[in-house]
Length: 96
Length: 384
Image (cartoon, rainbow over all chains, first blue to last red; front, side, top):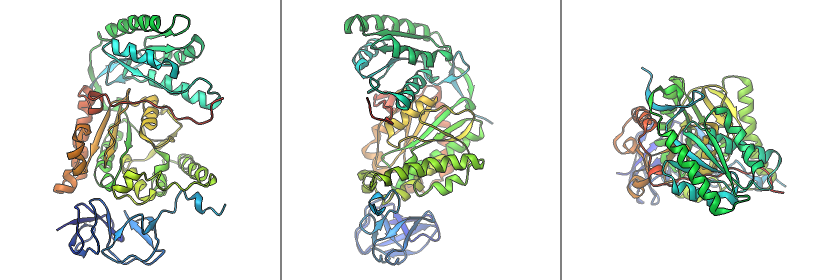
């Protein structure tokens, strides 16, 4: 079974340390136990959502905010640049 | 018990881990001669540079300080400067002479390429013969100044190689040594955690000022830094945002107090953990570490970045099992047991600290053996 590392109890993402296919149950290790069924294929090193997150909600890894959900993300979905937005160094959003 | 290694004692009491003669370009038009001399004389390294002609003000001062800093680095037994003319050449020479090490120079004017290569080869050969009389002796780990870097990062970096390097940082600081972390933009999103480790309010303010100034500059230019940092290969490796990258990158600095904040290539005044304000890309960042006097660099990599520094041997650490398979030629230390076998970060970090003493005593790194080494000094103003 593919494995995902969760770094902090409050995190809503885990990091896959194996490549995984849609429908596989991903085993959580680190600060969480249990498993999450994957909604899509997820590559080695990429993140899986482990707790449903609303649009605009914080994405938490290391117990810290690493970005904001662009739209609602369900558990088992791939969490990456298509649905997470950085809040830093964003001159395009400075209203200039 | 504090660690020891076998190093070279320099005239000023500093300790080198290599005993090279540096053939050092004063400006870009000297590089062909620098390479020709270094190719002709075993025991030398070519330290090339771009630009310099037409630089002025703060930009020129930083460049000359960086060139001088690389020459002054304790890994260098002696320096042969290769200049176009005497005046700028002397501005670098005077920055190296206080170390007490031999400093010599040749210039392209008036004799031209062939004469300059011939005379430079003769003088470099003499310097190498003299340097080869020196023997290694036992030195305390406290004599080491180490730069910690990451490049070609992915999500394994924050889980494996960077915390392993962080353990080494803590061990070296505890043994009385010096550690420098840099890459200012790679604190965006993690700066509050690092600032909390500052030894006092002044250091905290100085660190936060460097990070916020850089971000303010990008925003004022209307820039969206996504796709530049994190880079396309970082994103392919699973890193989604600069905040995520920064939280993993910071692990290289371990857990000890932040003692001081440095400018580009600036030498720390004391021991302990320091932050250097310098651009994140590896070549220009490692060049700044070498100029500050780092004898050794630890470089965490995920998807893989092979480049090392010319003056300061660079140890590549990876915990990505795929990279260790595809890019094994370029990795010095395997930290994949953390994710593959549940090994402890502290155990691999202690192993890396042992390995640091070996490299400091003469064990060579992949970037030295394969000669994948480069020098680049950051620019801070336009040329006139």
